[in-house]
Image (cartoon, rainbow, N blue to C red; front, side, top):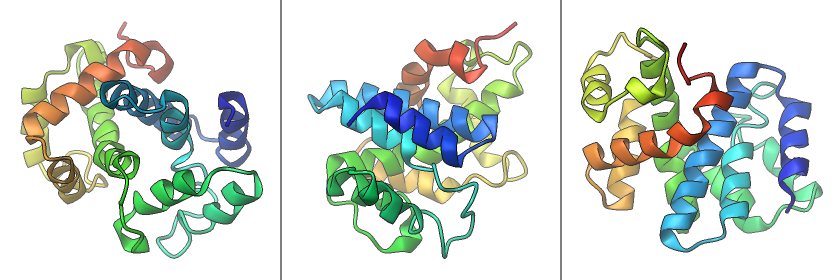
Length: 186
C-alpha cells in the first residue's frame, strides 16, 4: 500500500477540506497506536486516512462505508484494511476482530470531537486542549451534537482503557500534525 495513492483516492472522492483534515487526524492517531503496539504504521495510517473516503458521496448508513468497500477492493487494498473500515460503523454489522479495527473505531469519533474542542479555544489550538476540557464538553449534548458520544465510550471500552487516558493519548497523537489539521493556533 502506498500513502500517496491513498491520499489521491481520498482527494478523488472527498472535496471538502474538513473531511480531508479528519482523515489526516485519524491517520496520525492510527500511526501513533501502530507504533505503540508494534504494528505496521503504514497500513494503520492508510486505514485512518481512508476510513471516510466515500462519506461525501455516500453519506447515509445504507451506503457508507459499504459503497466504498468495493472501490477499495478494486484498487487492491487488503481485506484486513477493508474490514477495519467497514467495522468502524456499528451499523454495518462487521465485527471489529482485529486490533486495527478496534483502534479505528475508538479514535474516529473522538478525533472529530477533540477537533471541535480545539476550534472553540481562544487560539484554535490543540496545544491548549486538555483531557479535562474534552470530558466536560462530552457532557454538553448541545456541543458538537453530531458526534456519537456512545461510540467514544464504547471505543475506549473495546480497547480496555479508561476514557480519560484514551482522550489524553489521542490528543497527544494529534498534536504533532496540528499544522496540517489547522489546529496549531494563531
